[in-house]
Length: 409
Image (tube, rainbow, N blue to C red; front, side, top):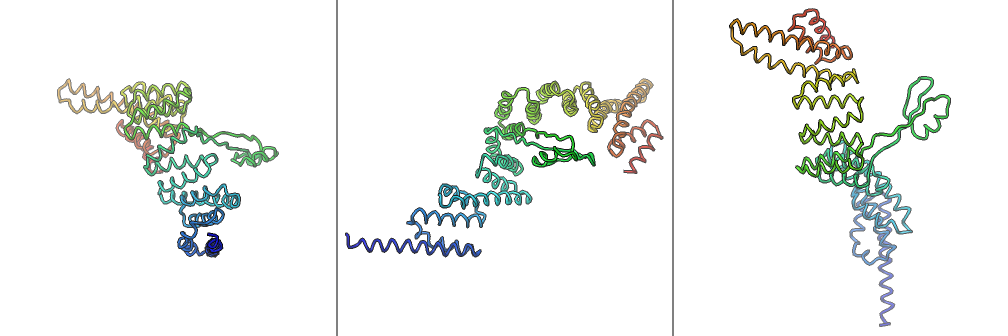
């Protein structure tokens, strides 16, 4: 056996020399930008490197990872770099490549998003998240949102569930200062805030937190379940969140929105009432409650809600228009009865009564529409409606005023 030992050593040295030679050739081609040539060398010599020692094998795989990154084979590059991250000899270089991979993924995600390839964008974002889950939580949220936009609900549910499990809120801090010279507030970075807040050229430094995205996550989980026809899981998802935060207004609204999606208007109404109890000065809550109450046939209560919304927010244009529509709901029944009448004296008297009732409805709408036009004299719907009402009532002056407003738009 000892007669073969020198030969065996010679063969081992020859193979090792060949591995290093081919690896250097491939690295040289890579550095010159000849990526296909470098890739061909590695592929043609795959069997040669199968017996390489750890150092050479890792160098071979590292170059494969760089080629994969260059070719936008991001998943392959990720798997290679993660496998090499504990190699002390390559640690800094691997970290650099992982950073480059993360940057390339975000660039590709943005490009895919611009092309409305939402599923592709989500795939890139999710991989970017997995590179550093602690730092890149936002990418997971964007991946979930893009999956919904791309109608990939299976992955959207998976991503939203991960966000829920890690209790992601997405809350960020925003910083503002007011410039003394212009008296204008502007948003600044945290560093600028710390510096400018001490300057006499700026006043009223303030910081605020953005709203939590957690309610939106829970809502989307529930809505995906609801779309799949699994209403039990849909309701369970939001109720679980509310058990942890029973007084959270956003979660109450989330549950309410799910019930409206499920067309359960009575439950929506109950939850909106709870929401108003916690935020009694929110005009939007009264408006939404007015819409649903009207749908449920309680026009009197709906009217009160719309009027309250206008009281709280006089610029809330939709409240005015919905209130007018609600008042005019009574017109169809009046017109129907008018059209059914004959020509007898009794019918003629009834016709006059109904005509008067119809005119009273129109007169009720006039101050509401005038109030809306006062805050926005370019609201075509309001102007046209009031113009038609004036025309029906025979008020020529009002009709001409609205006509001029309409022509000026």
